[in-house]
Structures are given as C-alpha cells and as structure tokens.
Image (cartoon, rainbow, N blue to C red):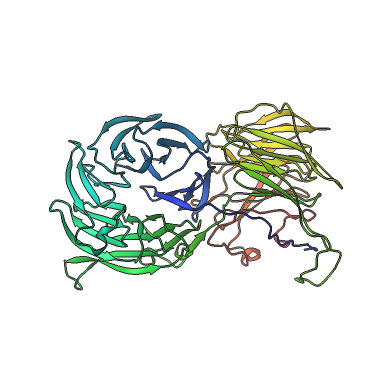
Length: 600
C-alpha cells in the first residue's frame, strides 16, 4: 500500500455538551436530541442510529423540551420563553412564538399531534394549536402557584397531568379546570424538604406515574387520589421517565448516572394480576441522566456526560445482528477537523471559535508500528473567535494552508492565512459575494484555487480564489430535478474535473466542473442506510467511496458514466471490513494510488 505517517493528535480539546432532552418520533423512526448548548440533533433509527441532521446551537437559546407534532414537524421550548419550530430541511430555527408565561420548563404534544401543551414558570399550562406554517395560541388552562416542571397528556387527549414542587394535578382539557391535586410528599420522613416532581406520565388506565427528587417512582390512582405502588429506585433524585407505547415497560434516569428498567409483569405465571417490577439497573453514565426515551426495541438515555446510550431490548430483537449491539455516542458525527496536507496544518472547530495547529515532525525512521520521537512539537498557531451568539456551522482550511473559511447561521467569513518565521497572520477577505447563509459545508479544491460552498435546496456555489486575497463567484450548481434539502457532504476530485455532493434527501450528484453540469445523479443506498463520509479519487477512473451507518459502497465509473455500485459485504475482498455499531463518519482516498479493492 505504500508508507504512511500516522499522527496521534491529542491536542484537540473538544468538550461535547451534555444531553438535555430527547424526543422519540411517534412512529419510532427518528430520535431528536437537544444539548445544553442549544444544539439539536436528529438520529435515524433505520440507519443504524446515524446522526443525519444537526442544527447548531445559540448562546441565547436553551432547549428544555422537544416534541414531534403534525407528522415530521419538530418543536422546542426553553427558558427563553419561546416555542421554536425547527426547519429540518434548512437545518435552522425557522420560527418562534412567545409562550406568554415566562420560562418554559416542559412541552408535550397530544396523541394526534395537533396541539401542544406547555408548562411555564408562572404556574400556567397553555394550549397551542399546530397549524400550517407555525402554531397559534388557543387557551389557558387552570393556573396554580408554582412552576410546572413536567407534563403528560392522556392518550385520549381528555386530561393533562402537570407536575410541580410537592404536588401534581390533573386538568380536564375540555373545561380547563383542575379536577385532582395530589401531594406526593405526604407521610414521608423527608417531608421537611421540598419534593420536586421531575417527570410524570399519565397512562391510558388512568394511572399517574411520578418520578421525584426523593428517588421514588410512584403509581397513583388519580380519580381516588390514592397511592397504588411506590418504588424507591435510588437514594438520589429520579430526573427523567419514559413509558413504552404499549405501557408495559418504562425507563427512568437518576442523578447518579444510573438508569433503571421497570416492567409490568404478572404476579403469578399465567395469572391476570400484574404489578410493576424493577428488573434491570444500568450504569452507563457518569453524570445526571436528564433525558430518557423508550423506542419499540430499545432503551435510550442521555446524560450530562454528553453520552447518548442506546441499549436494545433483547426480547424485542428478532435476530442477533447489529440491532442487538449496545451503542454509545459521545463525539459528533459531522466533521470538526480539517487538514491542510501540504502545509501540515490542522483546523479544529469548536462552537464559537477555531484553532489552527501545525503538526509535529520527526527526523527518525523505524519499523512499522513503532512510535517515533518528535524533533518539533505540535504548535498552536492562532485562535479565531466568531463574533456574536451564533455557533459555527462548518469550517475548512485549504490544502496549501493559505485560505480559511467558516460559516454561522447568518455570516460567511473567508480569511487569507500567512505563515512565516514571525508567526501567523489572518486577513479577512473583503467584499465576499453575498449569498443566502448559512453554508452547510465548505470544501477547497486540491490546488486551493476553488472554494465550494454547500447551500440550501441542493445548491453548491463555486468561488474562484484570487491573489493576493479575494474571491469571485463563478457558478451555482443545482440538481436538475430540484431539491428541498441542504447539501451536507462535498468531495472534489484530485484533478479538479468533478465534484460529488450529497444532500439531505440522500441523493448524490456528481458535477462536471468543466461545463458546470450534472454528470451523474444516483441514490445508491439500500433502504435504511445513510451517508457519513464522502471521498473521490479520479485517475485512472472515477471512484467514489461513501460509507454511512457502518456500511459502505464503492462506485467505479469512467468519464462520468456509472458502471456499478458494489456493496462491501458479501464480496471476498471486503469481508474483513466490518461495520461498527457507531457508524462510519468519514473516509479518504489515498493521494497517490488508485482506489481499488485490492489496495484498500
């Protein structure tokens, strides 16, 4: 294969943000996740839980609750007091509406997805109607003293249960009045302390399940106002709770990082009487588990340690395949590191700043696998901060190391980089052509003379970089059939003749850069797979390697004409390439070798 130098990079000080809330799609096909920095992520269950969409955070936006409504529409609410709908095609916060009750602690959608209920700081519960193009206020329900920390609809949409400090109440939706108020700390030795109801669920049988700061999961008959069962699952607070669709299983998360599985089981084998039993404890997290979700086949938990853990329910798994693998996700699936090969530079992307480093070097030689001593240590060259509260969408450094660009939700910035013995200097390129932000992906050509900017609706803008520091818009590439999704992966060929682009609808378009036309448009993936990385290598033929969801394909073409798509598994040369449970996030072509099966 040739000789390679492997640099073990240990100076990328990325600290992922903790998981704040989760929302499982009613059809069980997708999972929405919000982090403590305001970022929202969407995972696809059918694609090996691949992170298919990321909406970067905002310093002024906190997300306390997420929910799906009206099909595939995603809403979020937080302590800023606004209800926000997210544009999953444009990867942005599309529109917002003031809740009118101060900070919003909880939000849930009814079973049909036509109404949203929010719990506010002022003790009010408000109903909003989901309409085309947004939401509109419908009415207030009965208001009581104390912030509303958690909410749950009855499956028939007739009642809402609202949890607060020391009590919860059941509200009749039709009349808007409270029909039952239950104190959760009655006859408790710790009653001198506040008992916070952190999570709550209203089952179809009329049972209310509460999780509180005393470490208890309690089951209540709300019509009688009596306690049916109580389980002290932890000595610390129970912070989150999720019930399965069949209401025979639930998961709870605690402040110690432990999660507990409870199941509704018969008291006697074959008997009709059933009781809730704590069956399985798990310790996958090191910090608070603020969010849990229950899919038809797995228990899902997210902690402040930034880990997303998906544990399959083995009794629900039909076969021993990749669905039965325990998954832990910590680091983002998107690209946060850009490499300038010729200049030996690395660009690290953080939420609000970039870091440019020069790799270390050695003059020693050794055997394969031997660690060589460095004669020059890695050097931190410069830190570039982004102005404003918006987080950075994407960034890139050119192969020669003389150009650097990044984009936020409202701004695209391009810089000229000069490195000499005295240090590094950055000069902002003036009069960059104005385009509709944001840029979803940036990629420089191999000769560092062209910049490709991925944009909305499947379009890619092509810029020519000019000396000593300028740029000119050459063309905008668009798919011939139109596209509503943004482009999120780009890969130019080494000879500069071709550009491959992948959009959010998983269509791959290969453009001829000589005539700025589509050379080929394909959708190669079998059902349930997604692209995680893209690489192109042309001479002596066109080869494209697109791994996603732990799988991979090899496309071999000549002159832009498709010859074949080859699936990696089942072919003799690929049997050693096994997919990982976390998916494949990036791939690269060897710079001086043909991308053929025998060489990979």
